[in-house]
Length: 254
Image 1 (cartoon, rainbow, N blue to C red):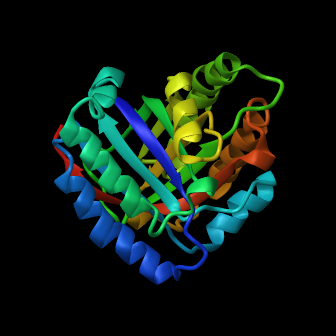
Image 2: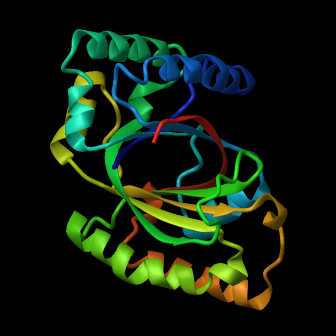
């Protein structure tokens, strides 16, 4: 499967409470209603939540501040995604969703790009952890002196196993890297609706609700230092973000 990632900035004229309510309770059901027409298999919203951990993650890395959240939508393939706009029903559905997004999303400061998921570890047995769990969401821009291929190779081959080696201490339950694909399609999002330039991918690390805020001791701190140093090998920190979210699954037809 492939996954569309939608990095969402809130419109400045909309209060956060109203923004999250509309996104979850109005726009979410609207997407679900169009799922068949656009061939979408799964749809998840991840909402930013306020915690001192956000500033700890940002400050230690010199990153940009968090965004309002991300949307993720899964399709069977790139071809299935492209077929969504090939029928009158699909085009009408996409037009309706785009018009609705304009009501609450700051389009020019948001980003949309297609990705391919890479599961690094999963200690949940495939369980869905629900919105009570925490999810560290890392929006990744590669270092300016690296090609996409170099970044993705280091991220997957070297950094993934490093994170896995500290998973027990840092209380990680699941870790997925989503690497950006299909640059021509992503460029079309920018040209077509004025989105910001796409990122090189995202990392997501789930933490069970009961493990949030638990001190993992010196081993966890050692892991944090090691991961931070390794990230500098391939991440352009000043153009990336890292923050906590809560995940809301709107539908899953997989």
